[in-house]
Image (tube, rainbow, N blue to C red; front, side, top):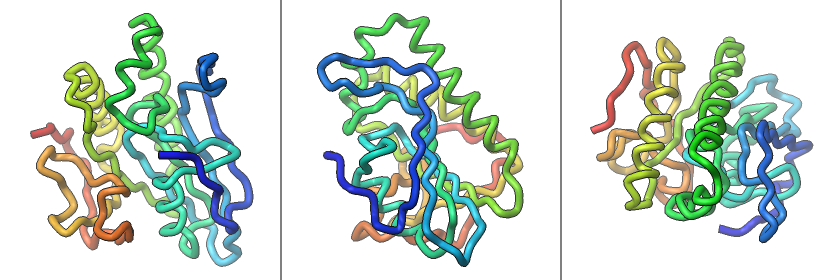
Length: 210
C-alpha cells in the first residue's frame, strides 16, 4: 500500500510517536501511537475513535487507502477522527513487521507495546456521549506465530480497556465477527463500502479469541 493524499475535507492531521525510532532506509518513524484527523464539518461536534490492526502509511502529511476509506465514512458524521492500532508498528503488510522488529531488542519492543496500550487507555477514559468507538482490527495475515501471538496478547489487553463500553463495528457479508473471532478490518468490507453494523459489541467480559 502506498501513500496517497488526504481527502479535501481533511483540515489538519497530527501524528503521535511516543517513542520515535528512525530507520535510515526510509527516514520515517517506525512507531505511531495515535493519529488525530480534523474534518471540515460544521454540522457535527462528534468524535470517531477507530482501533485497527497496525499503521500502514498514514502520517501527518499523507494518508493511505485504509485511512481514507475510514475518513470517507466519517465525513458528514464526525468533526474529528482518532486512529489507534493494536500494534503500533508501521507496515503495509503485517507479515513484514517481524523483519522490522529484528533490529530492536525485546525490552524495547515491550515498551512500545505497553506505551501504545497506555495511550489508548488514557483516551478511552475521556470518552463521553459525543464519541463513538469503532473496533476494526482484522487479524494478521502473517503466518509468523510471533506476530500472531503479539497481536492476540495486545488485543486481550485492549478488550480489558473496552469492558462496559459500547463498541461499533463494520459489517461484512458474513456478519461482523470473523472466523478468527475478531472484528473486520475496513479493507475487507464488501466493495470497500463501510457500513456501520446495526449491532453493537458491549464488552462486559474479556472476549477470548477462537
